[in-house]
Each structure stands twice: as structure tokens, then as C-alpha cells.
Length: 111
Image (cartoon, helix red, strand yellow):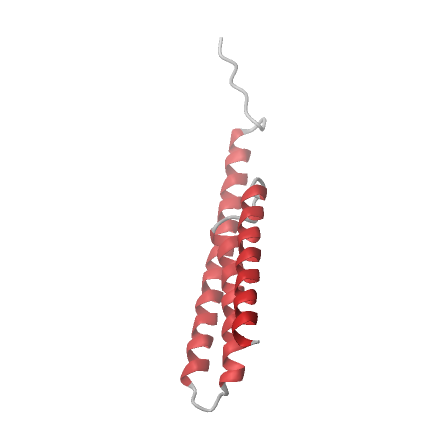
């Protein structure tokens, strides 16, 4: 005798809930993708316009790139979901080590 139990008394409810969650996840991914395309167009426009100072363009491009990295990690790499704690720790530890290395080399070269 097989014991077939589900998480819900009504299997159709569970299916509807998963479909709703999937549709919401897809909506978030599409909105994030559109925002990333928009940020990319802003970056191209900032570089293409001749009158903007390079001292303004460089930090703007770095800020837009950082925002896109966060979008990539949290929405497309699904790091906002539970169970990615160790992976998140490794990624941010690597980013910290890379940032410290770049900062050390810039300090050595420019000072």
C-alpha cells in the first residue's frame, strides 16, 4: 500500500500556487531585464554625447555597472532565494578580496 501524500489537501491549489509564483518570478525577471537594457542605453548615451566631462562619465558608468551586477546576482542567478547563503558568502568574499587588491595596486601606483 503506497502512501501518497501531498503538501496540500487539494493538488490543484498547489499547482495554482506554483504557477502564480512562477508568473511573478518571470515578471520580476522581465522588469529587471528591461531596466538593465535601459541602464545600458544610458551608458552608451553618456559616452556618445560630446559635451559631458569624463570625470562625470566614469563614476556614472561604474555605478550603472554595479547596479547591473546586483541585478544579475539577485534576479538572474536567483541569489534572493533561500539556500544560497554559502554561495553568497563566497561571491561577496571574492568581491571584497578583488576590491582590496585593486585598491592596493592603485595606491601603490599612484602614490
